[in-house]
Image (cartoon, rainbow over all chains, first blue to last red; front, side, top):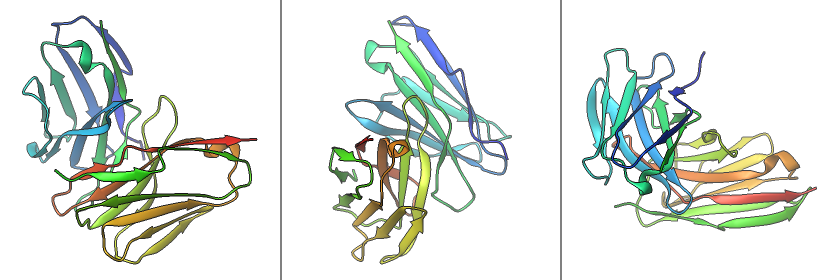
Length: 112
Length: 110
């Protein structure tokens, strides 16, 4: 069974730009969560989608948004990028009725 | 919001030594998970715990779900160089949301 796939692996953007990250979950998993990981703050929860609906949301500004498609693939978007948005963005998928999260390799975003 | 206190922040040990790390919370969790993350990679699930008092092993790793449901520990026996990495605990609630500890950086000296 293929694991969680995130694209792209690396990204460099300029302040003020926007970015879209993609995540393909493990087959059969309908829940997809997104996390931001920085050295100082650890893993911070962004949001979780289940059956195309946002089920949980973390404490991030509205510049961070996401969506989920009917095939459970998910995207997250960050608009008006700031230097502080530089981080490893991790996507995780979970099996039905289960909190176990299986992570992708992440997208390393650098904002310059 | 819910917060997890994971300790120690870092450990430097000799190969062959046993390691212990733990997480505590002011909130009750229904699930405790332990992950390991290598540099540049996503966290990998090591052990999942579902019941208070549960003790589960995965090779040289052993983890327990605290009786109060507010804590968990992870032990690694006879450490080897490939155990190097960051270990995270995560607590899961009834809303399917995970809260992560800040991690324990483990360094193993061969």
